[in-house]
Image (cartoon, rainbow, N blue to C red):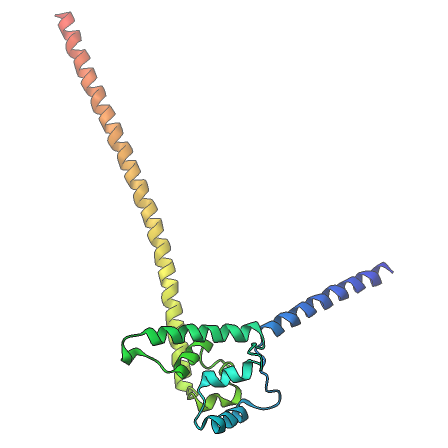
Length: 205
């Protein structure tokens, strides 16, 4: 009975943890409000309504905000808020050559193409806005990431080495100060000894 009860408790604990994990994953996932309609179909419908190709952020907004203007979840709102910040900063840029399009800004916010070959929040419509990176470009990016990581590691190692050397330098300076102090005391003792010697000779004379 005790063993069964223990197994029961283990099962409940695992079940509870699984439920928490599912809830966490759900909160991180960005759902869209179009149901079974693909992002590509939504893009086509918007293109007909607007008489132009909708921007990537327009398509994202349409798919992640309900009729009351509420985002489908906090993550979806977080992405949009970050895009709005970048958009505002871009408008304030005085150098026209450095200004970016809304599609470029959105691409930066969502982090570009992920490892699965998708762009966050755009579904199948992503290819209408951005070129998929080639194998060479992917390998190049991976190499750059590895190079940057290597540089970061070197910086950390050099900083640690510099700290060690600084500690050794401080210790050497302290030892030098102590040696100077001892030398001064020795000189003073020598002077005192010489003085005492002179006085002793005078007494003897």
